[in-house]
Image (cartoon, rainbow, N blue to C red; front, side):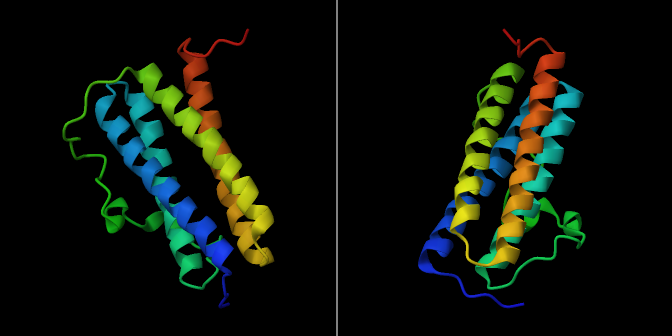
Amino acid sequence: MAITLSNKERMLLEDEKSHESMCIQKYTNYANQTNDSQLKQLFINNASVEQEHLNSINCILGGEVPNLNSNQGTSKMNTSGIASPSMSPVGMCEVRDEDMCKDMLMAEKYISGVYNVAIFEFRDTNVRNVLNHIQKEEQQHGESIYKYMESKGMYKIQ
C-alpha cells in the first residue's frame, strides 16, 4: 500500500531516522566496550532491533508501510554502514558499564517520547500502528536496561 507523506510527517520521520542511527551506533560502540557478557548481549540485541526500526522508517519514507509480521530481523546491521558489533571502536575512551546504561536508558526515554508525539501527527492509521509498535519496543529496551542495572545494584529505588 503506497502512502503520501506530508512535509511535517517526512520531517518527523527524518528525525526518527537520525535517532535510530544514533542508537545503533551507541549500542554497537558500547557492546564493544563492555567486558560483561550479559550487557554486551543486551546491547547487541537492542542494536539489532534498532536496525529493524531504521529499516521501517526508511520503508515509510519510501512511501510504503512495512509489514510488522515480516521477518525484519534477518537484515544485517552492516547494510546501513553502521559498524558491526565485532568491529573495534576507533578513538573511544573507556566508559563504565553503569554510565553506558544510564546513557542508553536516557536515550530510550527521550526517543520513546519523540515517537509518542509523532504517532499523534500521522494521518495514516497503518503508519501510526508501525510507529506505536516501534515505540513499544523502545520502551522494552528501556525496561531491559533498567532490569540489568537493578540486578547489578546500579539503579536503586528510593
